[in-house]
Length: 415
Image (tube, rainbow, N blue to C red; front, side, top):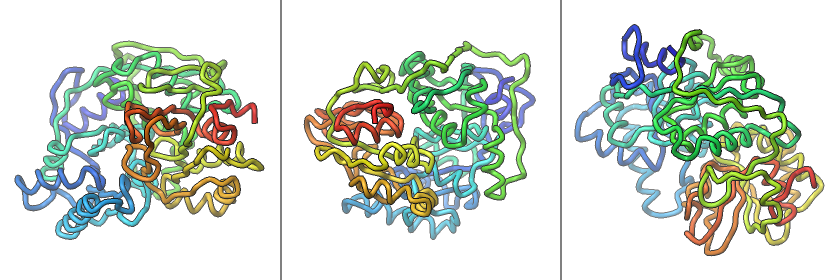
């Protein structure tokens, strides 16, 4: 069996499972945020009085924090009352950060576990060797009530990535290249299993970016074998009691893809699809009005540092707003302590509180007609950041920083 099959077999108390099998799996961690918790709670209260295990549920406020409308404030109040009533200890509701950074950051993610969340980018935790995936509100309500959910065991695609990344090229560029090759629907309900020396040598932040965007080609989950950096990250959070799951030598895959990244240049996802990817030289010079640095994809300290190194000594273009959203309070604190935030502030960047910000078009940075944004977020669908007549390009943090300086999409090597 491959990695996902082994984890799902153990979670469903089976010796082995095969693609297409329908299983009932025991869940290790379940999460919902301020946008998805209320509908989950509404369904839950129709089927149960008490959650199956309050210690295994994590509630996070991140999508609209602080609340920007009466409706979002009411949603958050519903979650607060539910958390108190159910005595859920793991509530991050005071601006601790984006859910997909908060869970690993605060020690809720372990290798070889099964994690579900009412958010499509729950696949992020596969960077730690966990089987993690998003669920709808009704399915998650059943998890809150029973601690179980059903899966069809997915087919797996083996993604081999080898080579050394050039300067100003990061994992964001690698995953965009992969999504371009597979297509937006090319991995629908598949498991993306990442291998190769490039993956083995990646930092935790870079690995999280890769698995975060697995859903952008339709995948059920993305998953990697924890490397040295991942083990150190876990150890720093007091997590030492876990097992690492690896694929059998004779593991079967629906298809195997090989990527050589030695010559990869920065990649840009162009409007209005994540698989509409071009090398940066094809779109350089495109005017921008807004630049966004942050999100569950690229809001970690390493990402902010990459941007700060490009920006240092420069000012943001007078026609551009650079919005910075640290992925968590821990990230924000470290960026302050090391001077990264000061560098960004001196450039005239606008530093915002940890959270999702304008990624979903709801809060702090919503665009009007004909505005163009370059962003480190994960989606650029029509109307994603506001008006259906606005445009979103996706790139790595260094490109966002360089573009904010020039007022147009720019290769960082030109700064």
